[in-house]
Length: 430
View 1 (spheres, one colour):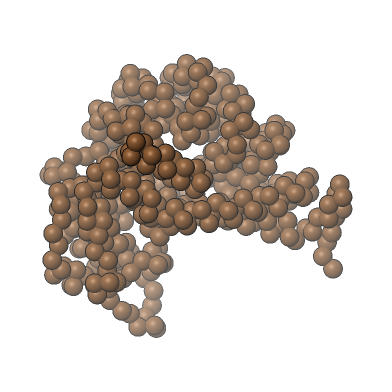
View 2: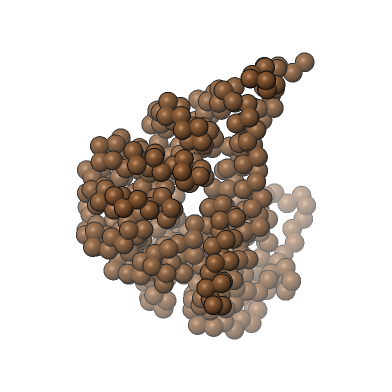
């Protein structure tokens, strides 16, 4: 017989609610990781929107029993998905006590769990979150709260709407802790804090200087390109040997490399040197976002690498717009062939035939180009509407530099993104 608990007239079936808790955390993780996906588009994101929401509703219906099971899962697994679930439940009930419990857990391993807290702030309705942002952005608020709040504000114009936040932001950009300064730099574009960001380019901490450069670019100022370039090289030279420290450094490097790829002018001789210095998979991400067809020979060369052959094929396809399957540019492997790293890391992507691709005639427009077309405004809108998430990110960032720093958050609710696209289309045809 299933363990059953009666609560305020509701029958709570423990195994069912436990399943809701685990699935909500799992599907949130899929949603969060979608930003770098080569397979999930806006329609797919809508699917991932519905699943965590349905499971969150199932937990909420269970009331205190649902919270208790969500809390048990967080204490046991200590993951960002479990933090997300618990924080959403606490925020929606405006339960400061439970939110404090979440914060205490995040404080044990912030480098692992903070992402879930930030995502919860962005998932919940604004009226639930604004009072929390008000408290957490106070200059004397604990470090974790300040970082989470400014990181959330950086991705939500609605959360940035309070006028007094601009004054608090300037204080945060001078905080003694680099992690707070870096988070504040991310948010600074929302407030047009160009002067403060220009000062932050000189920050002694590479992460702060890099985030200032990225924020400046989002408001159309490229003053920080060389600073971001230097930060990437410094991180490459000081990469930890392994463990969580290396994982976090690689995540940071991926973010910087992708942004750097948008900022560096095409055709400069330093790019090949950077491509050779980067780990191959990161180099392919740079090549994708830089979107310069001149580097297709380098991309093709990576198809020999067992760690990234499928990714290299997909990058080539994404720049050229030439479908590998439709044009016979893939190779078949026997069913009993042992899998390689690229099979495990890039499931669902075609396995390219390097020899056929190297001989395939390609005629492309001037860089930058994706899917075989120049990255003008029309192509950016087309990518945002129909392309996989990783290409949508590229289009959103490129569009932001000409739109006053207003960046579509491609991790946001799919319905919110669709409404944004509809409004942009209306403006274009007005």
